[in-house]
Image (cartoon, rainbow, N blue to C red; front, top):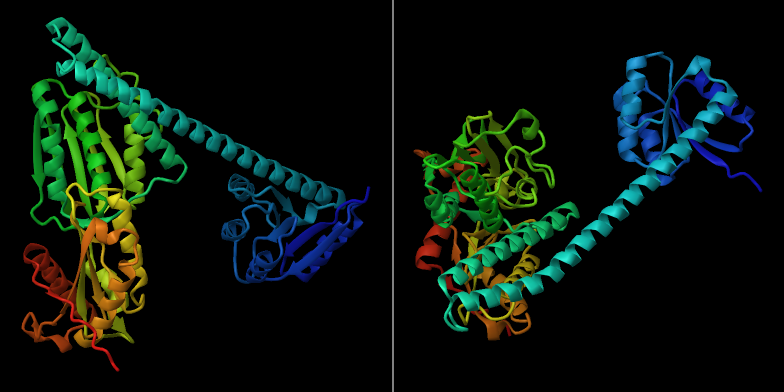
Length: 535
C-alpha cells in the first residue's frame, strides 16, 4: 500500500536551517512535500489557502518572536499540529509551548532525520486523537442535552395534570376537603412546584450549555425591576421573618438588558439570600454606578446568612454544584440556579462574583451594560467626521386588539422588528433597542438621517412591508409617526457648531432620549403624512 505524502509547512527565515530541515526530511523513509516560507505572515496566508499535515515553526522570525509566534499559528489553524524548531534550549519556553497546544519542541542542532520523522508522525497522530476525542465529547454532550431536554418536556405533561387536579381538590371544586386532607394536598402541591422548578432549571441549563439560550435586550430602568423582584419575594421573606431592603443609587442610568432574564437573576439571588438567612436577619438589594467603570451598572444582593467557605466560592457557579454544608431540609434543588445566573450575565457581557466569609453573610454582585444612546448613534449620524444635517425620529407602534393578545404575540412583534430593521439604511439609520419592559403594546423607534419630506418615503415603505405580515391586521393596530429632531442652538453657553463632534453626538442623543420619553408619556409625535403621487 502506497504511503500518503506528508504535507509540511516550514516557517523558517534562516536559509541554512531551512536547507538542513529539508535534508533531514528527504533522508527519512516517509514521502514528504515541503513548502517553506520565511515570514509568519506568509505562513498564515499559506494556512488560509492550504491545510498542511504539520507546521514546523521557528520562533524567531522577522515579523514575530517567541511564544507569540506559536500562539498566532494555533489561533489561525487550531486543528493543525505544530512542532517548534528552536535554536534555544529553553525548558521553560518548551513547557509553556506544550501546555498551550504545541505537539513537540525540538532543538535545531540536535535533529536527526529519524528523530524529525518520528516527531512529525507522533504530532500528526496525537492531533488526530485529540480531534477525535473533542468530537466524541461534543457528541456525548449533545446526546446528554437532547436526552435531558426530551425527558424534561415529557415530565411537564403529567406534572401539569397533577398540579391541576390537586388545585381543584384544594379549591373544593370536587367536594369538601377535611383540614388534614388539605394539609396533605398542600404538601403534594409544594412538591409538584419544586419539580416544576427543577425541570425549568434543567431546560435552561441545557440551553445554556448548547449555546441556545437567547436574550432580548431593551433599554430599561433597573430600579423598576428591583422593585418588582422585592414585591414578588416579600411574602417569602415575611414568612421567614427576614428583612428585605432596597438601596438604589439616584444616579443610576438606564441599562441595555433583557428585563425578563435580569428579573430571573434577581429572583434567584434574593431567593437564595432569604433561604440562607436566619430569622431576624436581612437581605439587601443594591444598585449603583462605580466611577472607575462608568459603562456598567453594579447590582448586588447581600445577606446576613451563614456565608460561604473559600472552597465553595471557587465552585459555586458551576453546573450542578451544591455546597454540602449549605443543603438542609428547608432547601431543595439541582444546583443549577447560580450556573444559569452566570450564563445570563455572560450573555449580557457582564460579570458575576461572590464575596463571603463563613459566618458573616454573602454578597453576590453582577454587572450589566449601561445604555449609551450616543455610542449607538455615532456610526450612523456622522459622516466624514461631521454630524449629518437632518434627522427624524420615527415611531412604530403595535397595539394588540385583544388583551391579553391572542396567538403568539411575541413571535408577531419579533417578526415585525426584523422587517423594520430591513427597511432602513444601515449606514444612515438606526432602529433603537426597545424601551421599557415588554407589555401588551410594542413600540419601536428609528433615528433616520433624513428630513421630514423624505421621511414619508421611509414610513410608507415600513407600513407596506409590515402589513404583509400574516394576520397582522387581525392581531393588532399599526401606528407609524414621525417628527423632526431639532438640534439645540447652543450647549452650555457655546454655539452648537463650535462643539466637538463627540459633544454634538451626546447632545443629539440627549435630545432624542427626551423626545422618546415625551412620546411614551404623551404620544406627541404626529402621524405620518401620505406620500403624494408623482404622476
